[in-house]
Amino acid sequence: MAGMAGKKPKKQAPNVFCIAQNGRLGYESVIFAASFRAANPDFAGRLIIGEPQPGPAWHGDPRISPPIRELLESFGAEIAPFENRHFGKVYPYGNKIEGLMALPKGEPFVFFDTDTIFTGPLSSVDFDFDRPSASMRREGTWPQIELYGPGYGAIWKSLYDKFGMEFETSLDRNQPEEYWQRYLYFNAGWFFHRCPHEFGQRFLDYALAIRDDPPEELVCQSLDPWLDQVALPLVIHSLGGGRPGPDLAGLDGNISCHWRVLSLLYAREADRVVETLEETIAPNKIKKVLKEYEPIKRLVYQGRGRKARALFDRDDLPRREQAIRNRLKSEGFWFR
Image (tube, rainbow, N blue to C red; front, side, top):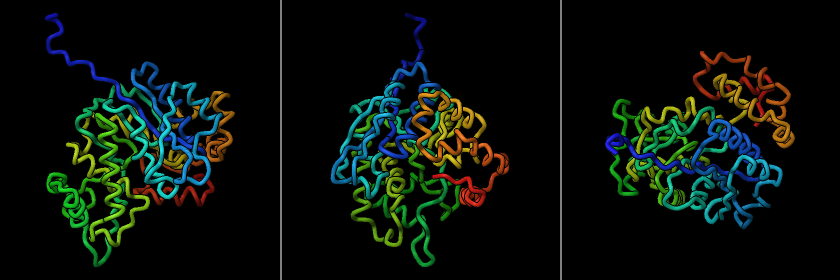
């Protein structure tokens, strides 16, 4: 056994989790699951898709349609139902908070937004599940500073104070004061931890406390749709996590891509992402279902995405996403 000395024990494969329901998220979940299985054929963990259930929080039935459910299960995905007790139709982003309780307690997880495509094996990402983190692929969307209102520092400090946390240790001191990147702020497109119940309960408690009893510094700030992204850095900081390091570079890199809007995928993502998308959903059994969704039908199956892509130089994209959106809209290539 001497030859085993110094070897790290093999880490437990996480459960990979996303949310799907009737409508857009259902169609996106097929791209998610199909690309995940293609990029991770030997994945040892579970692929779990959370599904909100009918109830007073929804108008109508939010469950996944039978044709999409059949496709997802053909990729080995497990459908995990959950109840919406606090969010739902009025704030569907809350699904990623409440849905975490549908996962097995005490098992590490990685949550991804459903509009994610996989281009490489997740096993090559060196997760430290005791130190949670989240995506830094974001813009300074929150807070929006008012002329005579509090600044970034005062707003964020009020939230750390509300939950009895040290504010100073959350700061990136390489960034100047009152510049938005100095303050811990994530895109909620992916995050992970060692236990979905511990993380999910903290996420729920913080989100509800911010929504229902915000500090006075937030009086001019909108929390819709930003509530999840306001609470997330507080949750991660409270659990001993922080900004992602180079060991997580494959996420939002060569392993996964959070594309968000299909028109934006064609405009700005790498060639490998576009190729993976088109190859993944080319089989007839997938095409038969996904062609019912207008953005996929027009952009992928009818080839309009490639025409939209030709409008942009990926090496010289506009700095602001809004400029890309405006160009796509003016040229008739914006599908949401």
